[in-house]
Image 1 (spheres, rainbow, N blue to C red):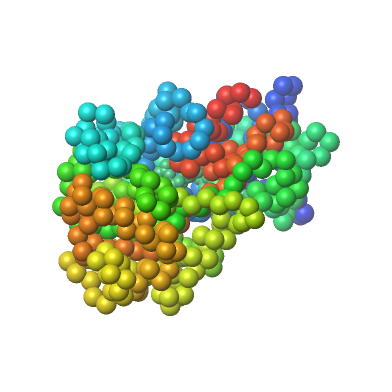
Image 2 (tube, rainbow, N blue to C red):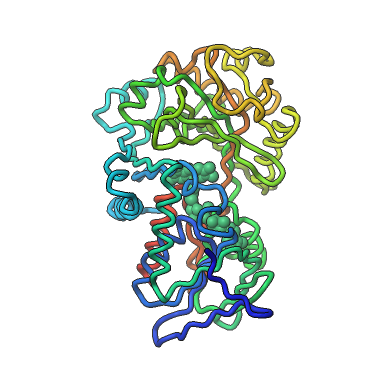
Length: 441
Ligand SMILES: Cc1cc2nc3c(=O)[nH]c(=O)nc-3n(C[C@H](O)[C@H](O)[C@H](O)COP(=O)(O)OP(=O)(O)OC[C@H]3O[C@@H](n4cnc5c(N)ncnc54)[C@H](O)[C@@H]3O)c2cc1C
């Protein structure tokens, strides 16, 4: 699908640039890039998109390739102020790429509407219910949505895709910007870095050269994936599909639920040198379990400055105990009793059995995190008793890495959008971030 034209030595990037239009490089083709290009295209700029994956489908793991839950919320998705109207435009944009039948069948709901009976019940037990509206596209429908977007962009003579091109460096030079990869380098008027969290190497390289760009960092979320039978959360799932709550536990850590997948599956998230756990669901119900993450937000102060290292280290420890590229699985009861699980009970794991080993999650999670998770589940059980059934399943480790927060005000023509900017962590926010930047071009 690539339309990269390689000459003997370099990639040819020739558009005729008109007055008032810029030659723009967009590095990465994920949610943020989609938002940016969908607007920038209207302004006649010449846009080159560099994506390291070989085509539009095979990019690194993200919500655009897996699950595809779109949220409208002022309380989650990032620290930017994204007006609700813009968030709605983002949802309309993605859902308009579905077939009419799929659009009609899209699952949607509201997490903790103020008049929901659950709002008060969770609140009274110390939880902060998070209000959001969501639309679930489903893993099985995402490929066709991406293909439609790609085809539409391809129709514009101002956009060129360059797949299988990993950008290694971006260098500010005399008011212009040099974009470099193994095979070529070229100068651009304006460069947008949209490489998500998986592009941290490139962002780190730029930040090393330009420390003035870095505002703050040092955050990582660590916890487990929890799996319960559907019937336990049937009412909750029916009412809001995605229930999101957070709570400050006695340890001082804020713990939250994340990414609820009714009738979903637990999956491995594969990194180069370790695996973690995640969950997803298709648009058609597939299993009799619901899974969601329970995550502790940890943030550190000096001299510590390696949250990615910390999260990776804990994940690797889990893999070591599981004997390789596998995760640990334990029942909730055994976790509370600090006992290795040897036999599972009534809940059948949805992760294939060659991807986990029965063990003791207490040997992996630092005590403060283990205590926080334990307290959180116990409190969940006070609201919905089945949420603390002894044979519910805990998979470890689940980790959410964050990028350092970067300052987009430092340079006129070098911008960071989406998750790599450290300011977003959802499809809606990342897409809106890109869209809003392009609107102001
Ligand atoms: C498994 C998983 C499930 C998720 N599910 C959801 C969900 O249901 N709902 C939700 O709102 N959020 C979800 N998220 C979070 C969501 O995917 C991200 O917040 C969002 O995709 C961020 O968009 P982005 O454009 O910043 O980065 P991405 O969408 O990750 O895109 C970055 C792109 O840059 C490319 N790239 C990286 N480095 C380079 C380089 N050096 N050169 C060229 N290209 C490069 C990558 O291949 C990738 O295609 C999920 C995340 C994961 C990991």
